[in-house]
Image (cartoon, rainbow, N blue to C red):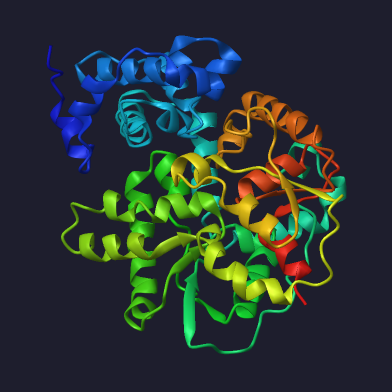
Length: 409
């Protein structure tokens, strides 16, 4: 029987062929086998099939409850199910819509509502940087739960001063520069060594993911439009790419074209921005020949670099194997976990704050698999994963570009 979609859902669909998705969702069970929350909780409603069933009920007129909201909240939006699904169900977009519809119908308790407001406004505020510096100053006396969210203070290093004909643009408005500023500097130095100049647009802010995934889709899309306005002059000047060294931001910016497809003022620009956006690892095939002569003494082959591929990289952007393959070509001994390398570490943006029990269980499970490699360092490609994993291990956890930067002459 054909699904009847509510006008409310149709207004939010934003170009998504939701009706086809609901009809295509077959009950093969592949998605439950790779869903982290289903693996932990064993509840069908905490897996993709169950959540799609809940969303379908609401769209067909059923009244959602706090339980409906809870099961949708528990989704990490890791999109592992999309990598597994043989029917190509666009689950990530669908769950965003479902959450938005349910949130309008189900009031949240005051404390929960306040926490979510603090996250979406605080993490994207200009005050976040000063607040993080203050937290780092008193980090040693913070409660364990807060200390886990505040990385140790880090030297940003030197930003390269050379100019090059080849220029790329990099997002400057993430939480990353405040938490781990050396990631951006290391990126600029590595690109400089390959003859590329990194430009910043100071007016650009958060990519919009935080607000969008906390169901403030209006606030999230406003930030997306503001970033397009900030980047557009540099796009018109001919930057080669918009380089993302945080894969969570990258997957969102790559979807600007989809999210703003129905906005007559921004649709074309958003599509252009998405087309220009590349994860830093996508540049590696062209960078390796340029960087290889500049690598210092060959990296110690016995020093294992364990790579944790973030969900936003391997499932959101569908990029697999590039980092480990190309770092290995530069002499590093790079390994991924032998078991469950595809599963989420539990960070998932604000998820580790809103669902700490699940998040830390997934973190410890992930670290257990990585520890089997006996690594000298764990590397990843997203600030959230790096911070989350570091809170559970004494092994250094870094962005892979920092390790590469240190190896260059």
